[in-house]
Length: 147
Ligand code: DQA
Image 1 (cartoon, rainbow, N blue to C red):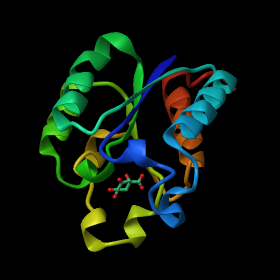
Image 2 (image 1 turned 30 degrees about the vertical axis):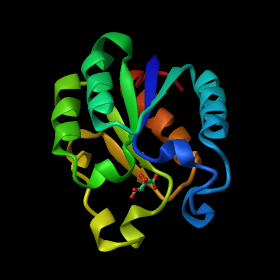
Image 3 (image 1 turned 90 degrees about the vertical axis):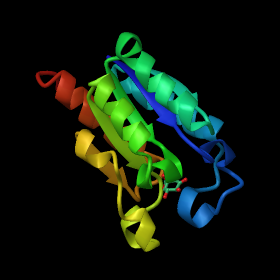
Image 4 (image 1 turned 180 degrees about the vertical axis):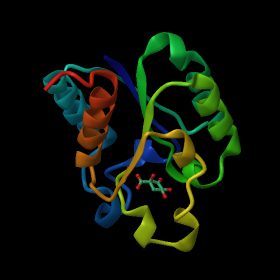
């Protein structure tokens, strides 16, 4: 299955952000690891990151023709972007939401996600391993008969 891993605002700065929440690795490191897990799990993974909400929305507009499933970490947009909610609804693809940090255990405003209701699952607080959990959830959903 073809999976797009889509990162939003400030996630290009991984490695410079608070390592207690986000780990010490860069986005490239993360992408390399997730690609490796994808290969193991039979997923062809592609990556996209932007700091521009409109570009994120337009990527979701194109996604249906590009991939079978989505892994989304929209960063702070998660908590308030109804535009991303609506674009994800339009994409009508199975999606899993991932957050590196435990968004339920931080500031109050991080507890709300406007996209969770459109996602199969939300993975939070597992660090980079959360992306592996997401890949497993998507392949389990799309290929339920595989081991
Ligand atoms: C994040 C959590 C968000 O609250 C934050 O704004 C981010 C990253 C995470 O991966 O833990 O930028 O999505």
